[in-house]
Length: 562
Image 1: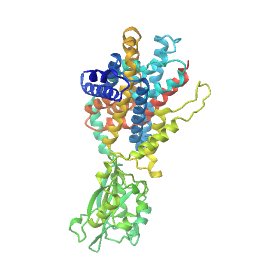
Image 2: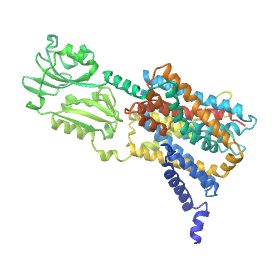
Image 3: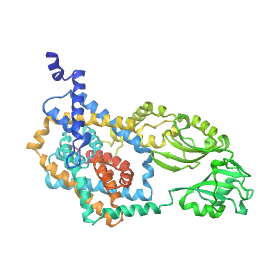
Image 4: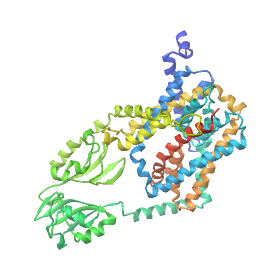
């Protein structure tokens, strides 16, 4: 039996360390699936499993815990950045700008409420209290990367003494943080007298009226005498509307038009455009007619083709000369579940699906050129991930001297990789980096990084956690954390509803994204039959995650010096 006992007591053995993390993560993940009132803590329960292991002395050498903690954090934030990168800058459109402004206001209010609680309830002469409140802040807003960024920054500030275990404050505030986000969202509904059925009806009406994004397919007969002898390129220029002509019937023969195709009176066209442009296109070209394209002498097919060949990454439809070389047209591009208009200047990315129309043999040739191999996408681009991490670590280590700060500001191993991942996810194709990873691969790497980080933080904090809760300020952390969670939501949520007249389901998604809280998003999605909460969540999530990490480091470096 000695071998069995040594397995649990020899803390510096590889087998013991692997066993420790495996037990903590497995127990935490399984317990995190238990729901109370329909709410679960998810993988965050790994933190509490780690605290329990550390409390009973089931631990590992500090340097090993620190390494695994920091590596897990880097992997977690990098995969988040890689996922949100392609849509990060698109979130600052007219509607997205308003949501992101409300999210930023909420984050500022979180910090302001934290400082107010710090000055009201705590002894400001104790240098440990403000860092502990930072940990409480990030438990209250359920943001684990922010906790990691604050932990890293504390190591730069507390150089002569051991930094406080702010994970204890995080753990105290987190459970009520999850409940408080959902509870405050529900409270907004009653404060603003929102009727869910009316909100659903408003969404339905808006969806029916939103003709600017809905694709519309029409058969037209050329009757405008001005178009006789004009090319498709010239017609595009004259009309100044986005439309795609996928087929043309001339003298009984069907062909795929290109930019040089000449129009003649009585030609019949198959045109794809938005519903908003359909009336203008019809008025300019000619009336709608009935055409049975499948009965023509030249059979055409429409096929969705998956881009998996790395050489296509970053190229546009203009670069590929689809209509001239292959005799086909691309009508739309699907990226991350979104249908995009097939603009000739839109850079293609690995993982895009393009709708190609043309003769079957030509469409098959395009499929071969694009790759169209799901198996190829199943292999994650490991090189891109670690190249990005290298650049992120270098970028995060750059010292930025700011007057008044005791030490130079660094984005660190949390902020640096996050920013680089966002940039690579958005612009990586320009330097021939294939950034596509399947959703399952991204989630797997992200969750592995997260559980390694949470387990390490919990094990390190476990030794002093009980003293913090039972004999220290644990209950005060719970109370102040709840205030930090709820008060900003009530302010910005009510403002979004009364001042900006936003739909309640959009507000729910915006709040969940601002707090980067999946349980709140799950509750919002269960309350609405449409994907509006998810859209609000994804619109503010990238900027919110960045600001949470950035403010964590800024607060610690500026205000927590000893």
